Amino acid sequence: RRCPSPEPASIWDEEESEAAPESQWDAEVKQETRRLMAPTCQEEFSETSLGYPKWPEEMKDPQYFRNELMKMRNDPRKNPNHGRSMEDQEFWNEAARLPWAKVLLRKEQFWTHRRNVWLQQYGKVL
Image 1 (cartoon, rainbow, N blue to C red):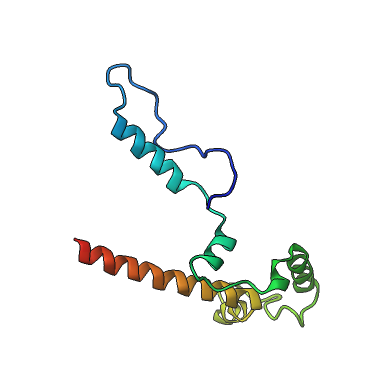
Image 2 (cartoon, rainbow, N blue to C red):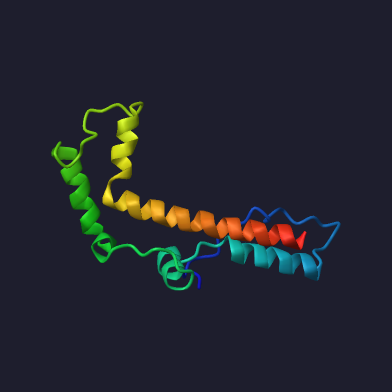
């Protein structure tokens, strides 16, 4: 399923040359490339159809992140990284402990596993 959106600009859109008209095969390849490069409805589609880990319901509300970011900005108890340098390793350890970071890391791990399966399949095809 694709998100309803205008057709994205394609890297394949070049000025037409008058010397060589586009073949039917080239037109189909260009159309398929545009379709594949179009953004998908990532979250809903990936969670339901592809088995990606789901976001908790409270995190789907945009107000949740507004409140969390406001607390992190103002309350040092909520944000242990307040005043800490990004060069410090503990900064990144604390960032990874945030609830939404855990969900993102699970999604990334799931995607990496899927990619490795694709690469194994590709290796067998070759």
